[in-house]
View 1 (tube, one colour):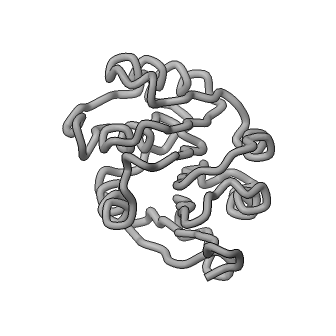
View 2 (cartoon, helix red, strand yellow):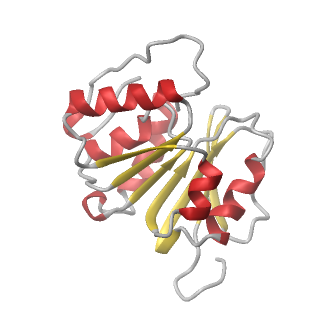
Length: 186
């Protein structure tokens, strides 16, 4: 895993186990996604939520590019330990809030909004298709914000009321969602 842009560009980190319950986004897909995001957002002003954060891949990219308010959520203890250690190595503890817990419970109790939300759930998660509904039901997305969900071709969100585009990077698909300012879907 490597950081592809910003002040930590080129830094590499290897998760300590081969059989982790994670699927880090490929550099190819991550680079494509961040090119889109860089053209839309000023990272220094974003409040970011990284759901099913895994190795922290997305969180590090945002912080590397100037974001100072990132919340990372995952329930796997090995991931939490790895992300804490990596945050210390990068000296970014002040920009990264690490939450160990169930993502769905976090969504229900977050009580705040985020400008950008990324979810990279396990593709085999039985409740994967409910993630966009939960994000919008609990009003986690700030006005003008984007929610991006990583998934494979076995899932399709084109009929979701807040869906507005998707991008394909091999078998990795990013579906983009937003709620128009003033309410209603695009």
